Image 1 (spheres, rainbow, N blue to C red):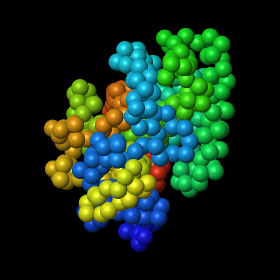
Image 2: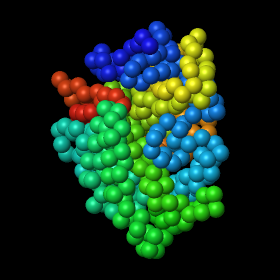
Image 3: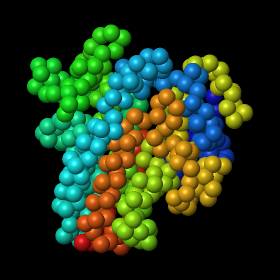
Image 4: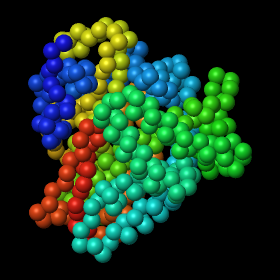
Length: 381
């Protein structure tokens, strides 16, 4: 089939957001050799999200619990996942999250310039992930290395390498699963122990299923939280009035962060596969075709968000696809919002100004990542 665009071209990678905006208006349902079909309009993405019978999540050859499943299988596993993100568990984690955020910001103070991704965003995402799962701090560096290798494998879309990466993660946490299976941790303060005590279809979860769940949480947590912290920090550095407003009105932080991330999404795309022939935007797509839902483009669609480049706190939050929609809406959204609010709050509380570094510009991350690869900023006490 003739291609409509090249997602890996230099032009696209130079500014993914602008490229996806252009595709949304020029060719909203587009075919490429790399991604197959891509949906750029909010309406089409939302349709795919809400019609899981036509747009299946079972896109991976590897066990992916529960993201790579459809109902009723997804429903059974999702009930287990939801119990791990109850309001009580999220609230109980808040003081730990606050402490990690406060310490990392404090350690940056006193320097003329910081590289926010390496100095704050990435460490924060790894540290809170380990703390939330009650994993030892000795896993910090291995997790960072594994995340980078996973990113490179996804970029190449090499199934052999992806399989190796999955096995590498399983090996990384096998000892923890074994220790918890011996009763060395209690479910009330350890989510791995929680999973070991859960049942699905009348049986305990297998180690493979537990590893898949933990891998899914880890990839989502480290990649998206790190990108989001960078995006929010840079936007505030460029908008001093908003920065000062949020210092005096921290109650606006949740809405402000969601709106910033709507404009500059931390997640590029998510995959689906068609279960039957379908027509979208005038284009006929057969059964068994791969589909990419382009989150960034959908959340910047002027048909849904009036003046989409403008920051506004009065938008309808139900239209923001930041955490997805439908049966696969992100179960960890309350935890993610807590983490992003606390790191932003500490960044504002412990500083008087966050500013771009004169003469230096951020380096954009490239697909499959979003946000910034490097982000130099001035942080003033």
